[in-house]
Picture 1 (cartoon, rainbow, N blue to C red):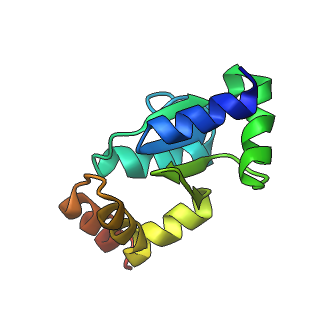
Picture 2 (cartoon, rainbow, N blue to C red):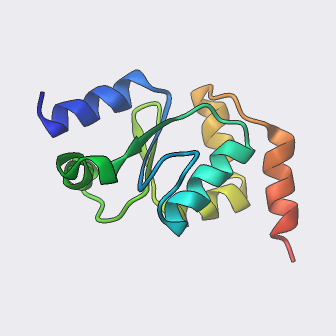
Picture 3 (tube, one colour):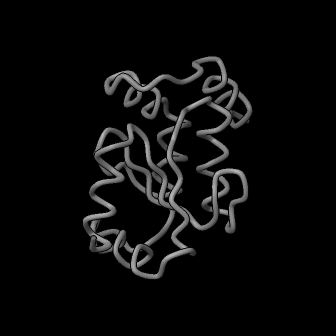
Amino acid sequence: MSAQDQIKDTVEKNDVVLFMKGTKMMPQCGFSSRVAGVLNYMGVEFADVNVLADAEIRQGIKDFSDWPTIPQLYVKGEFVGGCDIVTEMTLSGELDALFEAKGVTYDKDAAEKIRQANAS
């Protein structure tokens, strides 16, 4: 199975997927840590793919999404974005709306606490 096929399979079989450096329990870069932290705090069930473990996947995900950086978040097969986009969407409430529209379970109170903590 090619890297592109593996990526497509992973994105299609999981409601939420984060292609990241490291794992959700042990992120290996600050950007990956931030996105995984948001998802973990909001109680979102997600598959994590450590791009550092496979060079073909690491390059393949960039080609797959036509997006040059990692982490990359997918929700129900749709590419959402990287760290900056996910951060903005979290703070604006757009991520909540996306999760609701796609039927992804998350903790609304936790999402609100993130916004309150960053409102200053």
